[in-house]
Length: 360
Ligand code: 3HC
Image 1 (tube, rainbow, N blue to C red):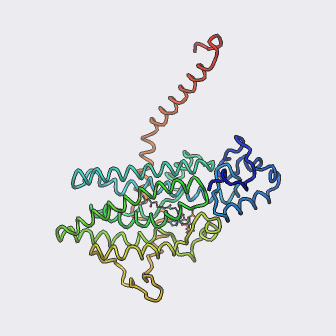
Image 2 (image 1 turned 135 degrees about the vertical axis):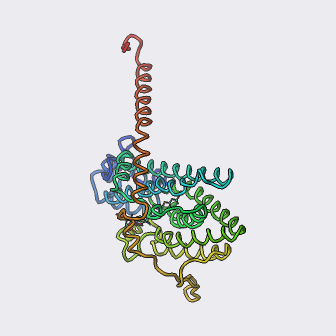
Image 3 (image 1 turned 90 degrees about the vertical axis):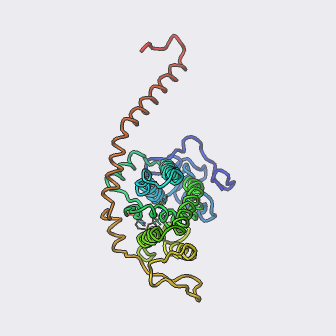
């Protein structure tokens, strides 16, 4: 339920309540409630109760600075991941083996751009500035998902990314549809619907290849060997080494821990691998009757740390490509801004009585 629908919510003071600059509560903090207007404890209590009752925090609601900061961090990193995530598969658009595969791949890569845009918009509702977020990405100050720093060596990688990477993304993101921040949760609903198509197209491509030649089956196995461990890393470090999980769970931003989601992904994926006829490259992978879950080995966490510090196999190339695309698009942004300014001038002049209009 949105905060606006909640009858127990203190009255909103209307247009004054716009989000403030990143990391700052907006004027709503002072004007959200007649009861709590001057009382930070009351505002904090109301925020905590809203979260505890599984209701949504909306952009004009008061929220603790740390909550706003965490949301901007997570949403921005997620948006960056979608945008950078266009590169590994985009690499195969011109080399797709048929028109059908090319159309599917183009649509998928375009969807990722759309996801990035919804997410940047969600970050803007918190007062973040999109140009600033882009700048943080292309100067390496903000992270994006580790998974997009590996190369895509064959067309089987496109299938395996759909199956494993989009599969892991769905596992991680479906619970985020119930995240406590309204605009993020709503963006995730649409994103997850599209991600499930992405996963299915990947699996369908792999099934086709597995029914093909020995060489095609070997390509699929090789791609699965390379992408399995990086896919497990997508869920983040083990809970014991995750500095943000505890607080994010308390604020119901995250609904499950990194390790819980990783386990869920493994349990979901092993039967899919068996149906495909692919072997997952983990000698410790086996069903545990007592736990009713698969046991599995740990990814190389030193490699994960190297990648999220910017030193993975493709980090420099991904960021350089993004920077080049941003710089090449400067004229589009300038043209859009000039057009918007002209439209604003025209509509101001239209609103003015004729005798007061300047001829300039
Ligand atoms: N890659 C890069 N950085 C990662 C990471 C990963 N796989 N996992 C964790 N990190 C970073 C965190 O951002 C955090 O960095 P910071 O504190 O410097 O900002 C640090 O490592 C510690 O990790 P935590 O577990 O404490 O961090 P979180 O509580 O934020 O959990 C997360 C990490 C599970 C990735 C969580 O942020 C999340 O669920 N984010 C939303 C989903 C998302 O961003 N997915 C990215 C993939 S997008 C995608 O898959 C597109 C699709 O089309 C395939």
